[in-house]
Image 1: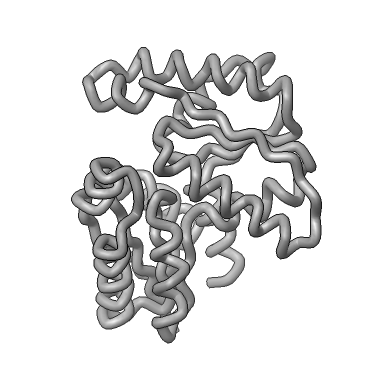
Image 2: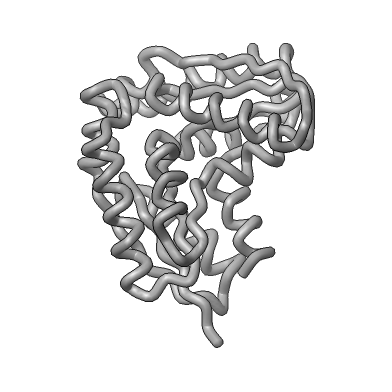
Length: 218
C-alpha cells in the first residue's frame, strides 16, 4: 500500500528543495505540501512562537492528517515546540525537521556547534539538541553562534553578503567543535561552496538528514 507524506512549510522556497530530496529518496511515496509563510513572519515579528501561532501550526498538522498523510514532516525549526505539541494530538507520526539532525549530531560528537541567522531559530534548535542529548544519556558542550545581519542581508537582496558572513562563522566555529548543526536550511548552500580545507568537522543540514530518516521509517 502506497504511503503518503505530508510536508508543512513556512516558506515556498523549501518546496522544490524537499521535492528534489523526496523524489530521489522516497520514489514510491506520495507527497503533498502545505505552505503558509505568515507563520514564520509572525514568529520573526514577535520574536517568539506565540500560543496563537502554535495553535495554527497544530491546525495545519491536523489538516495534513485529514488529507490522508500517513506521516507528517514540518520543515521549519522555529516552530518546533508547536510541532511537538501537535504530535500528541495526531494519530499519525509527526516529525520536526531538525530532530534527526540533532540526534545525528549527538551521536557524532561531544562538542556541538549550532549556527543560525535568526535568534528565533537558534534558541529552539539549541534547546532540541540539549534535550536529545539528555534522551541519549550523553553529556555535551554546546556552542551557539548567531550570524547577526546575515538574514537581513538575504531578505534585502544581498545573498552574497549572507553567504560570506555564514561561511566566516562556519570556519571559525569548526575550529572549536566536533560537529556543526545548521539551524536553518537556507544555510546549506553555503556549506556546498566551502573549500574542503574549511570543512574540518561534519556540518549537518536538516532537510537531507530528515529525509534520510524518513527513508528508513517509510
